[in-house]
Length: 122
Image (tube, rainbow, N blue to C red; front, side):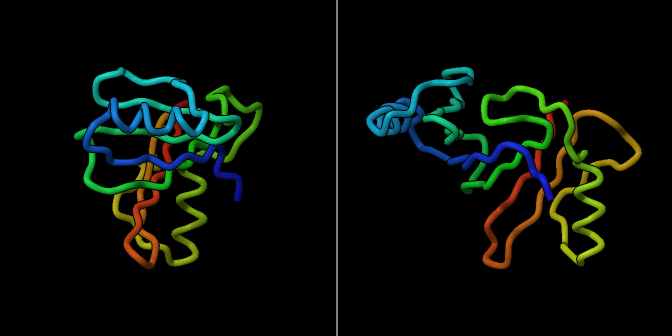
């Protein structure tokens, strides 16, 4: 199952303090609005910092993107990934609308309650 780019989305209390902390590990600003969220990159490693946007840390996969947020030539659509997981009995917190195309997402929780977001941007 090809899930695309992977990042950890962290719920942070102080975006600037978190950004400075991860810069000491060699991460640089890759994207974001600078007020509520920032995407930090170190090689192929991505960390999303999100202030006031959600309560828990989230494992995030982006079908259709590589680690540089560049489109992949081919990828498995998020709706197909959802169908495959449903067939294996996975319970969903949020589902992608399977009647649509393009950007969509779904969310599940792992057995320990950790949120997993599969978020397709194209």
